[in-house]
Image (cartoon, rainbow, N blue to C red):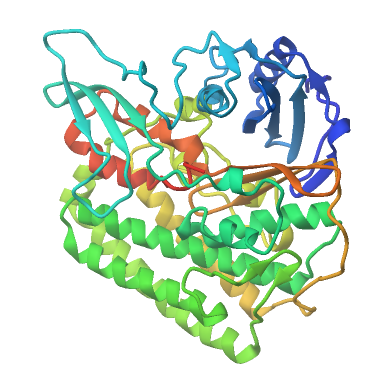
Length: 489
């Protein structure tokens, strides 16, 4: 381990801001590159801009083997040697740092804002008479979020694809400055509307760490049940959407109905299909009594039988397999180099799962085996989802049969620690969600940074299209199922 990483945190932990080791720009680049070379990875990397120009950099490195996070910081600076040439997973983080603070990562191979295209910014272009350019979006024919995709093609073959987002930007991170307040939890629940439980849990972990309180076991169990419900609903919905993209309507319809069933089970708990108003700092607002637990056990048993059938009818069709197999491949090496997370990373063979490597709450006592596959193609990303549905169902059933007994809310009044740094990670259905907070002397957020799993994985989508057919883009895009609004915070 790099000896310059002198402060370590557990998942959902905090430290004094002055305890974090601070480096010059050159040293910070060196530490990150060296640590990545030793097997660590970047889970968060951002700037705290100064009023005039420049700012300070903060990073959180993850040691997956030992389940430890390492925060580090820089002195005030206006530029620093780019980390990207030696550590490709840093490239989008550094572009965002440049976009938000003006700090220049010198030597970055493709330095332009992530979301705001400036007057002189251009897309990557291959200059050849045999290459044609295809521009897709930001307005699409289907009912999806806006995003722009620029292809360099020769016939059907894609040589390069560049992704431009930012059309969903709502300024949420800026709105969080000076909070927390009454509105904050609602911002968290709508960062990505299909990940309400994931983001509200991560935020609650931040507040609980800074207040020095721990939720009661029953509340932790209900949060975990809701998080797995959220995973099941989105995974089964994605399986149906993948089937729809290749025109296989039986599974599209079947899975679409099952997604509704899963959402309705969450509504049985809290009255909202997306889990809003359930998770709060200190615990949860709704209990699971015995009649409701038995009702959910019966429903999820039926759901499992139907989900197995919905998947089987898809895997039994040769034309489905022909479209999924060997399409949109991301190798394990590429996935590791660019820092992919979640089921898309696990479909390429990477064992990355916060529930197992950085367990908190109910996951400390109820293990969820990591699901991986090796082929890294659309088929692997679909099959991984199906296998994860089965793991989540088993996890939910175990908790519903033997729920812990305790109060729901630990609402001991404690002030939020001032001049502190906190980090929390949750394995959302798309992958690793990371929230980090820096507080001022009064306990308000001086900076609140959210890293949605989509931020890690958009470049994976671009990589999977390289040398593929442009006609495969819709099914590749769906197999990643990334969030646009969760990226544009």
